[in-house]
Length: 122
Image (cartoon, rainbow, N blue to C red; front, side, top):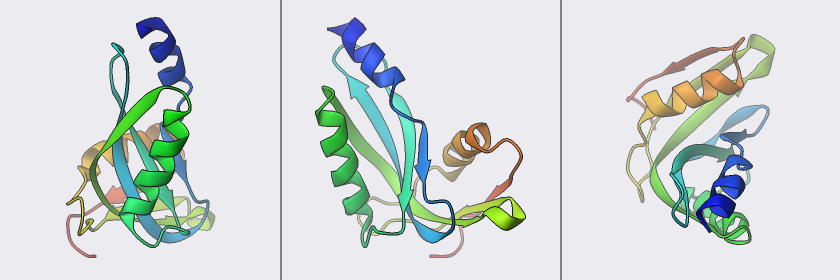
């Protein structure tokens, strides 16, 4: 089970965010049975609440035998024409994500971007 969970976990993208705009994001810890956990970033403009991102991601993961918990949230400002992403703010329901962790994940996904973060703002 652990090997299967590990394989399923390895197929979960570290980052899934919208290509442009300002939107909410969550930092999630994804787990499989007996497998190590990994943190992933999900941010989409369709989400009215941070919980919407958690619920949709949890449903997708459950189909692969994985679970997740929300470590916190915030907002992303993604400006592809400037190659910039700014991470800021917090989630009323889940608290502030560790924006430093989120920033590292984004830098791995967008190596040619300038990625910044701040604890200020909502």
